[in-house]
Structure formats: structure tokens, C-alpha cells
Length: 276
Image (cartoon, rainbow, N blue to C red; front, side):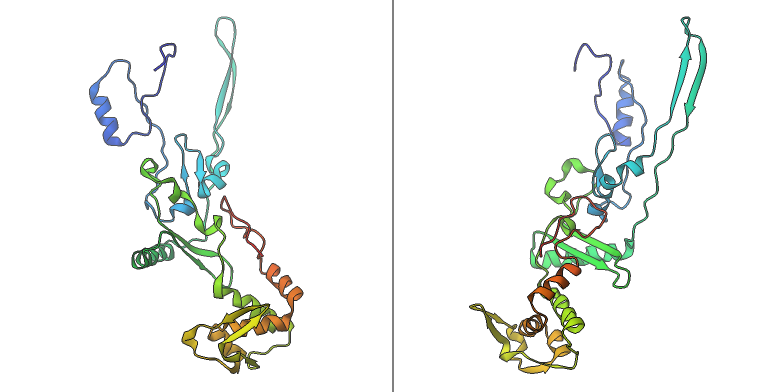
């Protein structure tokens, strides 16, 4: 407390129960006021997407931060001109403007199911972190973006800061076998390859520049099979053969064309640039 000040906050953002107990004290010089407070009715559902706010309701994470100005709106004001005797001589008013509504592509039901599925896998594998992204293949819209562990934006005081991070957009990770779609797409589009063409998977191993690339042992020793079968089996050797048909320069152009090396453009903060 500073004795030179006429006013100081003792506590802010009290729960209704806490506020009632303070009022019952009837302490002289202690006053309370009701103010709006951001409340998230679905607790931790889509927490990293929605984000969170600080004490003054300023957006500090997620969509709350990205669209803070739009959601806050514009406060109103009243200016009154007074004469020397403090009589009003005119005034000017501006009504407050409400914040904008924000409509997401996220489907609440799909988001809930994705989070439950992720929780199950986290428990099963004992992983530290997990991410599930559900996307509409026809429109590209994100229908669910589940991240674990989650946090409750209504109670940030007891949250570890590491869980506030949106791992789906802030971290770069290897795409793994999903990258084969880029390679096969390039081969089908530009190298004269057809789905029923034959590709030699060389018994499940190929050596390039001193490094041997193997197929998964569960696939056996794949030999000459159709291109669509090689993709179905997720053959690494088959993908290498497709890449050799396309050539390095053209394949790089396809990689960049698919967006690798750029930010995704998703309207969330801390969107990392991918690698190519």
C-alpha cells in the first residue's frame, strides 16, 4: 500500500463467493464494484485456439490475442464544457461500439471428439504432448485442432506456462509418410506416371549417395508392383523412385507449391514458417 495514493486495488476478479464474504466484512474504506469478466463456459475445450486474457481483459493468447482489437470494440465517452462557475455549457457524447463477433470453422462436436481421442492416446502412449488436426479436404477449413495437455482459461493462476503454447502452429515437425503425397502428386502430374504403371521397389531397399533407404519390414520384400499399390503400402523405395522420375528441381518446385517453406496463413499468433 502507498499512503500517498487515494485508491489502491486490494483484489480483482473475485469469484461471487469471495465477493460476498468481502461485503459481509463491512470494512470501512473498502468498496467493491461489479465489472465484466471473460468467462469460458466450455472450460478447456479448444483452449489453445481460443486463447486467454489478462487482468484487464486484453488478449494474451490464441484468437483472443489475434483479434483483440476487433473483439474489444470502441469505448464511448462524454465531454462536457464548464464555465468558471462549473456550469455546463455544452457536451459531446459518443456511444460505445460493441466488439465484433468471431465465427470459426471449428466444429464443437468434432473438436470434443478429437480431444477425447487425443486424451486416450496420451494415456496409452505416455506421451508428453499431442496434436490432432482435422481438416475438410474439399475446403481446407480446420474443423478441429486438439492439443494436449490443455488448460482452463478461466483459471490461469494455476496453469503451467508451457501448456499455453499452441503446438499445432508454433512448432515445426517432420511430416513423415504423409509427405509421399507430395512426391506421388508430382510424379502423376508431371512425369507421365499413371496409377497402374509398374514401379520396382527393389525388394524393399535402395541406396542413394551412400545411404540405404528401407521399406517397413512388415511390408515384406516388395518387388515390382503398381504405383497405386506402392502408395497404398507406403513404400519408401517406391516414393524414391517417383522422386527420381520427377527430378530434383521440379520436385522442389512442387514442394514449395504445396506450401512447404511458408507459413500456413492460419489466423493464430506464433504461426511458424515450415521448412523446405
